[in-house]
Every structure is written in structure tokens, then in C-alpha cells.
Length: 307
Image 1 (tube, rainbow, N blue to C red):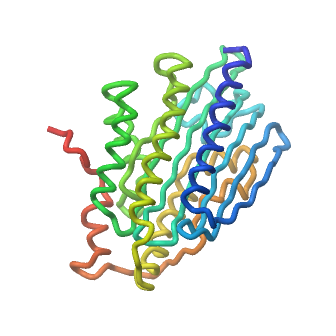
Image 2 (cartoon, rainbow, N blue to C red):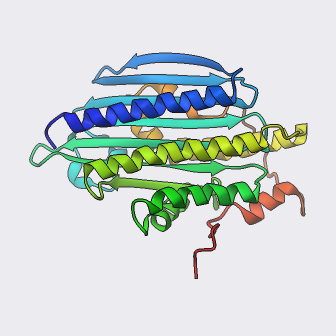
């Protein structure tokens, strides 16, 4: 894959996805405030960051596009591919996160990404990655099942094993070992993906992004007018701490961005606006907060597929 055209096709698709997500957000939450930054990276490449805040429903969020290149892949990108250590690279992606005001609405994250790596003594290789996940505070079971149904539907178009493989990968990836809990209720996560050739792999990445938008904005619409208390908002801020812990300690995308000299403001845009840590806090027995811990923060077969 030495020609530049395939990478340019990815760029067109990813930029189109970014614009579509922005339009969907602004249509759902017209009062949201937007800040746009075009940025460049000293070693090569750049991107466009769209940061959002103080909408009627979304408290903070962002939809980022980046297209960067460099002389040597950082360690976070070669964990599973040591043969590419030191290879020159081009990395492209769209990254999305939404933190709603209302604790009865889930936080959600999605990204799609493309890598092209050229070892000094080998052929250029490429692969896609991405996925989406849901982080509720006061979960609605119907929404969780709907989320996974949408995930399975898009996967089934590309392979009968895709949903089970990428759901498990998501459960394993978005896990906080020091808390012994998942970050939320999962979704899909895939990496090193080039199955079926370039065109099919690109289509899969594109459809993952569109499926995220279709699923999340439907969940947002269904629950955006729910009332909530100050106590529930405090619990949301406490649980947001888990989101911060994961992103800073474990997330490969955050590590890649920082290790590759990416734009710090864009990389850390995914963090929530307000967070609270309370020493030794425990949910009251039988409470809605306890229900989250007991029923949702572990891998589950949400669709009843396991025999």
C-alpha cells in the first residue's frame, strides 16, 4: 500500500463522519456552545477540534479529527506489533465524547482510527481500529440492550463472529483493575483490523461511527427531559472520577496522543467538566446507586446469546 490514495479515502470518510456527528449534536442540542480549533503538529500533520459545552443537555463534549505522521511509532502503538517498533507512520482518526448534564443520561465515547506504518526493512502495512462504549450512572436496561443490539447489527454485516469478539475486547479493554469494575456497560472495541481488504475494512470503520451516532442520539432523545436531584448529580460527578482514572492511566489513545507529541488540549478534551472523589464512599444498600454496582459494572451477556 505505497500509494497515497487509500489514506486519502480514509481522510475523506473520517472528515465526513466528523461533520455528520457535529450536525447530529447541534440538531439535538441547538443551544450548545461550540469552539473550533484548526491545529498543526510540528513533526507533521494536524487536525480539527470541535469542543462543545453548556448545551441544554450536553454539559461538555467534543468531536475531533486528526491526521498526523512521524518518523517513529510511539510505544503505545506497537504493544501488540513489536515488529513495527521504529517504523514511520501516518495515523488518522475521529474521536468523540459526550458528557450530559443529566445523571440519568449516559456518558458515551466513540472513535475510529487508521494507521499506516512503514518499517525500514519491510512493506508498508495498514490497519483500522475503533469502537464505542456507554457509561451510565443510573442505567436504563432497555437502553443498554438497545445499545448492544445496534452493535450486533452493524457487526453482523461484516462477520458472524464480530460482535462476540469485539464486545469481549471492549469488556476487557474498558476495565479498571484497581477498581475491579468495568468503566460502563461496554459496546465494541477492535484494533489491528484489515479483514476482507481495504474497502471492506474502511466501510466497517465508517459504519461503526454512524451506528454510534444513531444509537446514542436515540438514547439521548428518550431521556433528555428526565428530572434529577442534587444528590444524583453528586453521584454522577463521583462516578466521573472512574472515567478520568481510566483515560489517564490505561487508555491507549490518550497515551498515543501524548507520546506522539499530539495537541494536549484536544487529547484531554475527553475528560468531564466536574469530577469528585470521596474517600471510602459506598452506596446505600438497596439504592439506585447500588444497583449500578451490582448489575452493570461487570461483563454481561446483554442479548442472551450465550448458551
